[in-house]
Image (cartoon, rainbow, N blue to C red; front, side, top):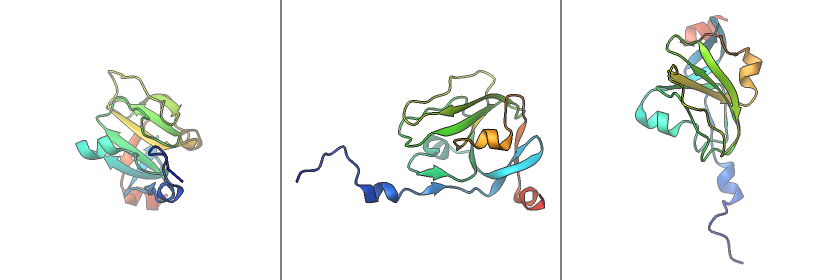
Length: 139
């Protein structure tokens, strides 16, 4: 039996790791909401959540005014923030075809599992920040 060169064997897909949790904490309006990893190098920003089967917590991608979902196998929530951390856009992006448009005021994009932004109370106008582990443990 011949296998298509475009099919991925089921065991290979099952081995994709879940991203996170990070070593920091995501703050929404000064309250801790989730573990957070920060992508602050060119390599970590390029990789993002690619090659993962899910995300635990969130990923803060610095200097990312827009993101795309090419190569992603699952939908995610995104929040786009300005330099002050104020949310200027929130959306759920579909696997493979989702994307955010470039925004001049955008400074970073935060990615999380689908449904997370609503569960955490993140909406346009919220202020997101990177907190330390002490802030996570103190809550």
